Image (cartoon, rainbow, N blue to C red; front, top):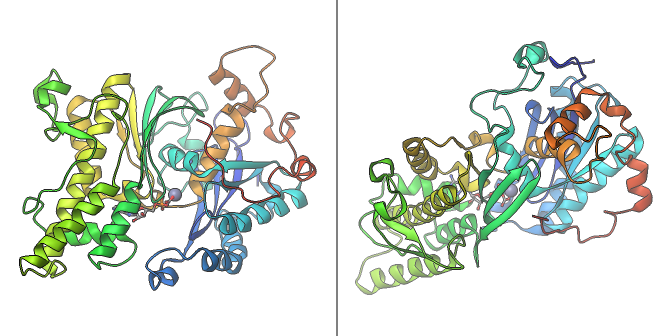
Length: 434
Ligand code: KG4
Ligand code: ZN
């Protein structure tokens, strides 16, 4: 089946595979925006008994699930054979080596057999591009109708192509503030010095014996908690008045804490917060209060969640003001957190800056985001061949997209990848080239 967008060029459809941690996922995504299918086989139930991801078990589960997940994703997208598509994309890091290996090997095999290009995708870039996806599945019949007059898709609710954009990545393994200067062009502003935000949620949930995964468990417990009963620190923040950050005081709903000055202004630190929770629990026990008793646990969870959100929103707001960004995107598993979303929405609505958070099903690991990132990397990334016309970046990419992508000689074929064997030797864990 041949699909065209309003520009008259064929839709560029990518089969994406994601196995970096404990979700086996496959998706078909068109033009980096349209989700044609999105399958995720979660291993949460299997890892729950270990209280965290057990790497060896995770990779074995990927082996068991991957074929079905990919077949289902293709069937959902009405793709009879991989050859009907334009490229294969796969997460090649960062992540658990044994888990990554399963997805990478399958993707390499599919690319080799079909002759399609293989696009390696950084998992964090995938999270970033979850904000560019349209949340609804795009039925074939509506595909053309959803395009704008220029052949480029733009719908409200998803990130626009307005740069610079500020990205807050908050996942189980990463907490980073990134200035996105254009598609696939990043500047790292700050990162966690120790635990990631999601990791802190998971560790505190374990201390409180609330269950796994910790983020949703803390959020659920906090709903019946009083965030004001206990005070927990806001690491790498300092006391401040609203007017200090925002001259327009009434435009800010931020808590009265500001990022510290100096080199750690845009950095994070959450391990001390976890220790503060532990100390609080010990103090309560000394005073004869059972810290894990439901009301105390709920109050601690609420105080902890509030402290994390204050830091995340406070630093993001500060960076957004400092760099004069045109939009703000939050992504990664912790972006599913209701308080974080509400607080960020409230703040950025008040100062009139567009804020994007992926729909909940795209916050945690999935392959649709990998398909989106792969598209932008393919047409906007540094490996792209310069256009002979010498036009700007964006027009170049549009020109490439409007031509027949399958015929692009510049893209490495699956055979090139295998011949070079770039990704054959593990570990595949790779730090993102910001
Ligand atoms: O992005 P993700 O699925 O995997 C990684 O790339 O790490 O993020 C998983 C993390 C876990 O730490 C989980 O506890 C956290 O996201 N998380 C949440 C929520 N849902 C998931 N944290 C806070 N609130 C949530 N609702
Ligand atoms: Zn992730």
